[in-house]
Length: 218
Image (cartoon, rainbow, N blue to C red; front, side, top):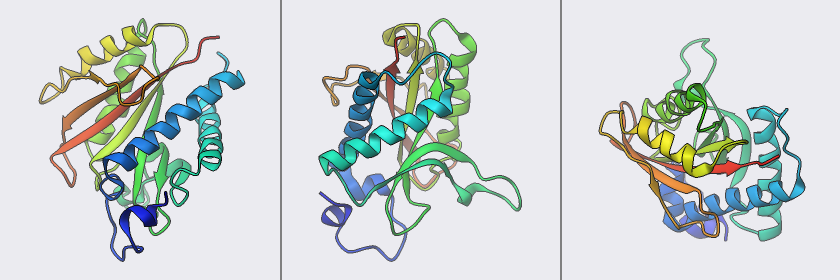
């Protein structure tokens, strides 16, 4: 199914991508990320020497592969290290989301995914996941014009459930006490959660984050 099939003719004005796709379309995007993760694990490409950007680049390649093989949303494209110029001021460097899905009609209409290495026993990494990931959406630094986005946690030595517990504790201390809720939407993938946040800046007062915790055991 193409984006055109879901929303009709190419819009003349910017449109919020997750709203255009609807819940079923967003689920398809998340399934692509999930399937790319499964494929990446089987490939055994990820090792402990790799940083966040290297892992994300490999994940994007596998998303493209899975999209090509499955034919899911062929008119939505994966962009690695997407700059959001709508938030840049003067000569300031535009905020860059790690990767996104975007339609072809405008470069500022996308569904973003921010990625972080995170471990349950590393306080600094857990805090950065929230302060430099979750809060960038809440503050409108990423996706100010949109109502949904994704956070991906790359885990290499601790359990996903322990990481989720650490993140839940930190997020519940934010304004509105948002919690992290496990969901079965992406089964057989079991480490998918959602959280809903009160935004500081944005087109909607609430912002939904889809959290996928990816364990790369080496």
